[in-house]
Amino acid sequence: MIPWLGEEEAQAAAEAVRSGWVAQGPRVAEFERAFAEHLGVPHAVAVSSCTTALHLALIGAGVGPGDEVVVPSLSFVATANAVTYVGATPVFADVDPASGNLTAGTVGPLLTDRTKAVIAVDQGGVPVDLDAIRALVEPRGATVVEDAACAAGATYRGRPAGATAALAAYSFHPRKLLTTGEGGMLTCQDGELAARLRRLREHGMSVSAADRHAGGGAPLPETYDEIGFNYRMTDIQAAIGLVQLGKLPAMVRRRRELAARYREALGPLGERLVTDPAHGTGNFQSCWLLLPDDAPDRAEVLARLATAGISARRGIMASHLELPYKGTARVPLPATELITHRSVILPLYHSLTDEQQDRVIAALSEAVSR
Ligand SMILES: *Cc1c(COP(=O)(O)O)cnc(C)c1O
Image (cartoon, rainbow, N blue to C red; front, side, top):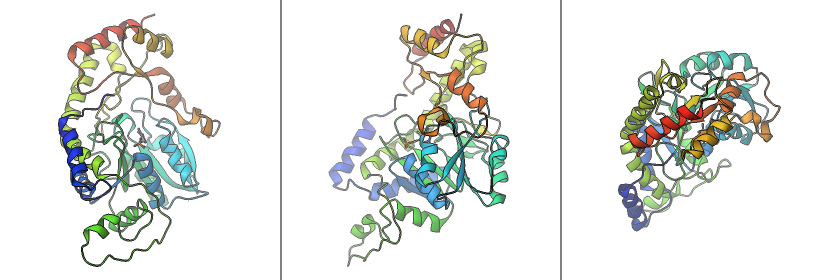
């Protein structure tokens, strides 16, 4: 993934620096408003990363020690780690082999009396079927948090992905479409919850530093009513984010064009490429392809591609295979293991040219043949 950054972002960052206001301030507030408006949600809280957004989301959902949170193993490890941060236990569910996402069918059997939340991931920018999972989980009094780290620009049932979730967490790391270097956003529907999340990202402070400085008059005395964190975004990041948000539709358009071109040009192989689910449209943040059964080992395919000068990546990781979570899966995870072992992520970035893509297509067709 090569981020699509340009002179406009450089200018915006420089203006923030020149303004003298570099920590969380007016640009963060403006970015939050713009992001909330883009999604059509009432509240957006900017934070330092999606990982910290997930941590705050779980606190907001009341998850704590002794609780269980169902998560896909097939995700960046931060999804499971956030559960561990609050002292709860991640319970790994399998995914649908076509989308790489949780389904009501994979989540259902893992729900127990201790299930306090489910983290539904929009893996690689493919929208998860949130409604089906909510219908199962919410009547039990548990919360569904959407890990929309990859999903800016994706849509679910005609709305931006994450817009309908009780809590949704986005990432602005350079491996995602929209980037601020590091950064994240937490969105929610409830005003009181949003106010608490704003306090939690800033040491639990009752009056934000930005409001205190902007207030004029006598400074309001602040209190620290619960233990918070320093999970703030800076105004330099937000300035970049505002420019990037304006470019998001163009980013998604180009990525979808490139993905469609891969699908067409790869022929039968292209049918194994991740695609839009029935309930929405993806942003092709990760354009992954499941290798055919008769293709060589994934390592061999990647090595052949590297020899041809193509840098493809191994598929999405599976958390239950990593040391901290090894042996903790309660059920077999066959689709997760298939995708993590037998998929490759194809080069796809905004500035990829048709000629470069043609080289990938030729090298890939060669690399998968025995
Ligand atoms: C990238 C990613 C994260 C972590 O995002 P950061 O902003 O780097 O903390 C979490 N969940 C998923 C699914 C991701 O892809």
